[in-house]
Image 1 (cartoon, rainbow, N blue to C red):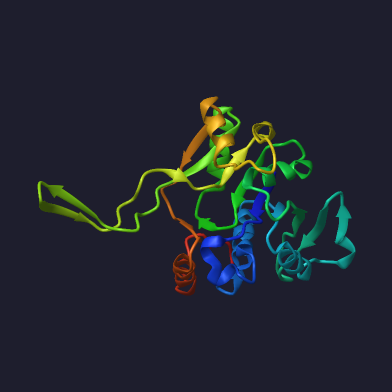
Image 2: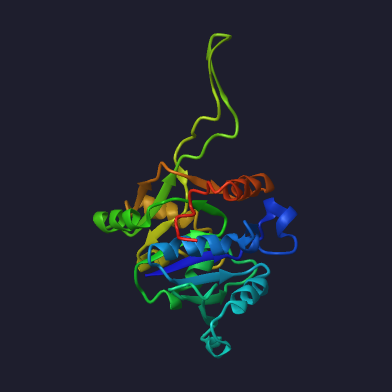
Length: 257
């Protein structure tokens, strides 16, 4: 099963880091977040990646090619570059990586649809390049196969940025320090190829019309994840992830060193 990763956005809310590099290459613990995401999927046996490039895509292509096992494998296949990648001699499993140029201004839905030729008309996984979690991918996939619908989204409850006051009249009766908010889209999707029919083209946002239509058609199910999940949209969030990594408390680091 292939893993589609969207790595083409501008990262507009994170310009301290993304002015010169794409968000996918922003480092945590000395490695790009893209590496962390791929290592996580690989731990569960998912070693084939189809990566949608856009903003500063050449930087990602250069990073991947630096770790290619052989320059002879960097051959063009259609409109994608194909690589076999290993990050160290100790890596037992090589990654198969397809890099697909999906355009700088293409929206998320359009990027997904442009990946179709490399998804082999089969069930595939999808995530963004801006968040980390400790989602059990085996259980996620099992849940997806259990409901026989087209799409599964991982639902998460991130902590609120602010504490909540519980009031009785004007009296504060309780203070909640950063309680969990409601369920939101945490990415980590499992999708059937038919979902591509819900995407019109480059100007389609996956998070808007396609997901709304899938929900209206009762084709979208939520896998509830109550463990760790953290997006990386700001410098503050990047530093939070860095701190966890440096303290050896990164919940997503489940592979052997």
